[in-house]
Image 1 (spheres, rainbow, N blue to C red):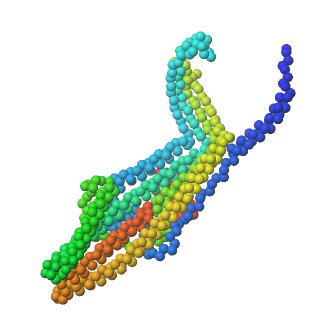
Image 2 (image 1 turned 180 degrees about the horizontal axis):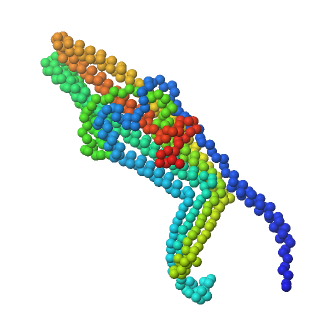
Image 3 (image 1 turned 90 degrees about the vertical axis):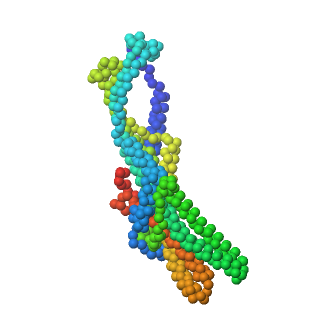
Length: 503
């Protein structure tokens, strides 16, 4: 027998020299794989809203979810109810919630076991000049039938899939909070526009009285000029004041019509479909903040709640990006029937089975994994900064409305004192006119002054009502974070999952 040639001894040295290099390269690759970035701790979020230093009175309680019913106005109740059912902006917000909920389902569907079934049949002609010519097999055409079930299970050892699902859940919570914010904004807009129209109606009644007074003064001025008692300039001045009174009346009337058109738009109907509204007195309001507003505001403002959920979602995304550094293990199994003879497809000899464990090991990614992780960290930092900005904005809104309400209360008190003084002046002027000491011009002038002060008081009251509405909106409009079992005010605590989206 002929001896086999010996191996080249120089190649042995090459293999011996290459072995340490290969081991070192493999070790470095594995080290790069198993050394992910450190898992980020939850960011520290403030546990209250900075409202310290506000010297404003306290109110009895927080706004209720149906806060507008505290005004005891059935017209307003009907308008807000109709707006909540028809407003297009609210439909957009609802669609966002639905989209977020479907994202949760899509993320959850990628976790755990998946089972797919398949069945196919084909007829194929073999090439006579292929790798195995048809003449060797004895046939040119053949059928291929396959029926099987494939199972796949991904082992989520590092929590990547779980973190993705939790992130989608948090985004769904954020969308729901944003929908609540849109609903509160709509309720506020309807109430503010409605009470603005009521204020216009109150001012319109005063403007009509003012017009009657100016018409009487104009007639008196014309008679005095005709009799030669006064100069023509006095009649001209009276006419100018009469024209100004008419202009004010037209402006207030048009303002009311514009508010009705805006109200119909908010409700989601045409202006001619708006129900007939009856003028009613503006409600009495009182400013102030609920006890512990700086603490509870975090859980009662939907925009703050949405921002907190977005921080939580961004934090979970960093977990997803971090898990990309680690190996993935999946298991695939296939069971089925396969045959080129359709008559034997369902026989025991046509069975086919396969089990395929698969390991995905990220070795060299050219910095892609690091870049993705850096992007997720930057997004987290951005959502934290956005959260803090929302909290500061909430503090500014509440402080502005509370201080404005307090200022308007003081102005209304002074305005009321001025009205009472003008009423005294009017009564005295009317008494002198009855006694014949003075003519009718003095009480008419006093009445003009009183009507102007009453108009100013009506405007102040309208501002007070509008400020009260804005304060209710800035306090969250009756919103409450869905899950109160875990305190949302803990310094490092983020909103817990709850309801249909619980993890």
